[in-house]
Image 1: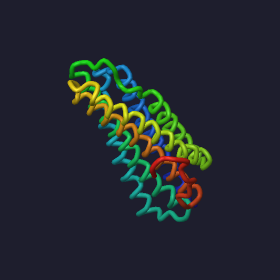
Image 2: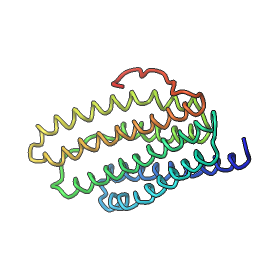
Image 3: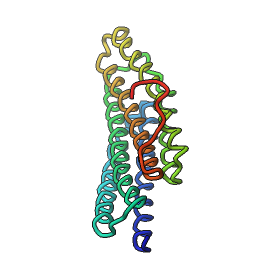
Length: 222
């Protein structure tokens, strides 16, 4: 591998990790705004998404530059392709965080509801998946990537619990149909965050092992 390619790949890796950390921070803030129903924090999250989108554009351009001018092969080629795909997942993580923030703002603008879904278990699982996927990416750790993949079954279980809460809530609180609908959208967005973490883990496996080999889920839909 040429020195120039080594330097370019390392620069791409640093850019990707920085984007991942920015997406992680956005997700953390979104979960905090949800827990506290903090509309002011939610508004800041929506504004910060512009920077994540800029990072995505830069990484995509850098990746195409590497493919065109450095002609990487084997694992180096997989690393470039995976980096561009992962950047797409990080960009969508930012979109999910922005989407949760948008729902928090909508929820706080309505009459308060006496109860709200218990998001804590689901957000804790997804937060750990996000941290582990970033660690797996940073270290090229296939074992940790598989841990992330297996965790998706737990997200599926929490998704069903919270979806049931929203269905029951629509009957228990008929005057708060809009709020219940917003909560249902939040549940879906949290599930999507878990899906994107799983995608990142699969790309780590692709880079390290040459294929997206992974264990089957213990339970839940694929």
